[in-house]
Structure formats: C-alpha cells, structure tokens
Length: 85
Image (cartoon, rainbow, N blue to C red; front, side, top):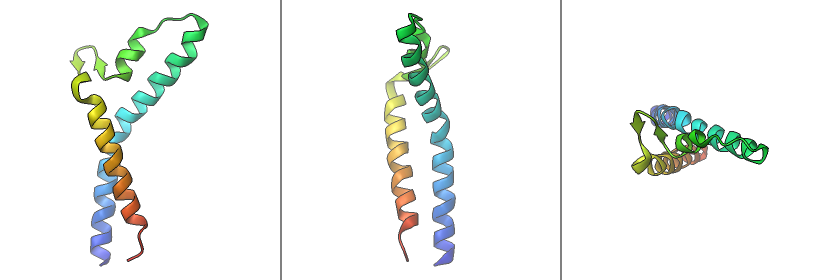
C-alpha cells in the first residue's frame, strides 16, 4: 500500500510541475495587464501571452484546454493523496 501512495505522489508531482509554468504565465500576465490598464499603458502583448500566443509559438487553440485539464487532474490527484487508506 505504501508503494501505491508513493507512485501517486510521483504522478502528482509530475503533473503539477508540468502545469505550473503555464499557470504562472497566465496568472502573472493577467495580473500585470490589469494593473497597467488603468494607468493607460496598453501592453496588449500580455493578453497574447495570457491566451497562449507566445509569438513564434502560438498555442491559443488548445492552451486554455490544457490549463483546465491539467488543473483538474492536479486537483483530483492532490485530493486522492489526502484520502486515508
């Protein structure tokens, strides 16, 4: 039973590590844009980053889907670690 718990932890760590960077980019770009907007600074490139368009690499068609699925999987795997076995 301890081996199964260890495997779940490894899977959870990998999933959260994979989704942490895009989530951080999304959070920071949205926050910074909303701070700059009232100041009259138009940093439209931040909105592009927020939606997954990174210039050369355009991930917009599936960026939000990836973030949503990764967040749900991270949440489910984290909750499953809290369960008492």
